[in-house]
Image (cartoon, rainbow, N blue to C red; front, top):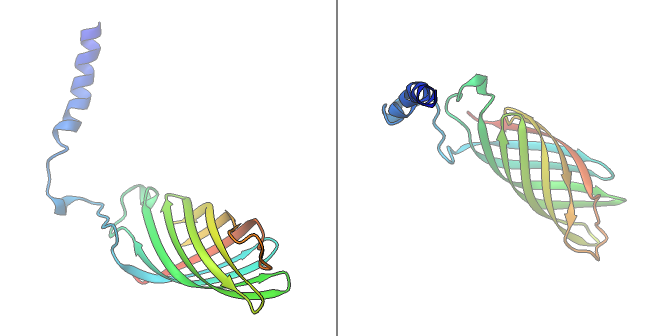
Length: 170
C-alpha cells in the first residue's frame, strides 16, 4: 500500500519539478524588477485627535503585467519622500517625511519617519501603519505615531487613521 501511494505521489508531483527549469526569461508572465522606476504622487489625510495631510513623490516597483488571479496576488512597493502638514492642538506644523510601503493582495504595511516643526517647537516621529488596499492605489491605514522627543509641545496622538491615494504614471 505504501508503494502505491508513493508511486501516485511521484506521478503527480514529478512533472511539476521536471518543468520548473524550462522556458525562457521572456516567457514568464510575471516580471517584477525590484524598482521599475514608475513614478507618481501620494496624497493622504489622517485623523484621530489631530489632523495630518501629506503630499509625497513616489518611486515604485509595480508589476509590468498582472501575476494572475486578477492581480489579487500582486506585490507593489513604494518609496516616498514629501511634505506634510500637522495640526496638533492649536499648533500648525509643517514637516518632511520619508516612507517605505509594501502592498500584497489587499494587505498593506508602511513604515515612515518624519520631522515636523512649528514656530514654537519641533518633533521627530516614527510612523508604522497597517491596512487594507485596492491594488496599492487606495489604502486605508491604522497606524501609530511614536514621538521621539518626549519634551516637546508637538505631541501628536498615539494612534491615527489614514486614507491614502497613490497616483502613478504608468
